[in-house]
Image (cartoon, rainbow, N blue to C red; front, side, top):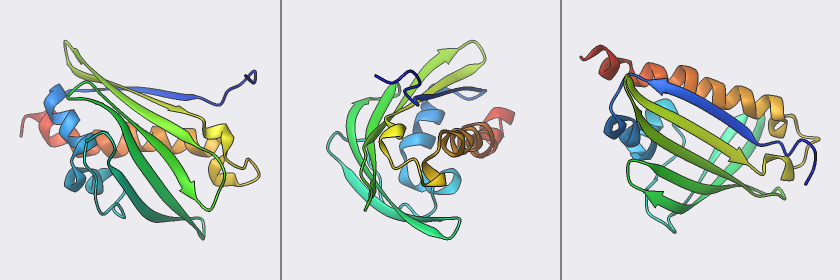
Amino acid sequence: MAKDSGTIVVEQEYAAPVSVVWRAITDRDQMRLWFFSEMRDFKPVVGFETQFTVEFKGQEFIHRWRVTEVVPERRIQYDWLYGGFPGNSSVTWELSETPKGTKLKLTHEGRESFPQNIPAFSRESCQAGWDCFLGESLKTFLQPQEDGT
C-alpha cells in the first residue's frame, strides 16, 4: 500500500435524528436536492446499480454506483466508478446517534486508482467536493429539521 492511500474521511454532525439523515442520504428525491440533481434513481438495496452523467469543468463524467452493503439507519456502502476511466473506489456512509443529533462519517477509499493526471480525480478536488456536499449542501438541506420547522 502506498504511503498516502488517498483515503478521504469526512465527519460531520447534524442536529437532526438519525432517521432524517438516513432518508437524506438514501432517498432518491432527497439526494437529488442536495447531492446530485442528475441522479435519476437510487435505492438502498444491496446489488442496486445506477448511472448518471455529471459535467465538471467542461468534462463529462459518468458516475456508476453499485450498492454493496446496507444496514438501515446505520451504514450504506457503494462502489463508485467512472465510465470510460480505469479505477474503482468505494464510499461508506456511517451514522451514529449523538446527544445533539447524528454524526455522519464518510469514507471514500480507492480514489487514487483513478487517473491522477485528471484534476477532477485529485485528492484536493475530491476532498473539496465531500467537504462541500457534507458541510454545506447536506447541512443546509437538513437545516429545516435542525430548526425544528
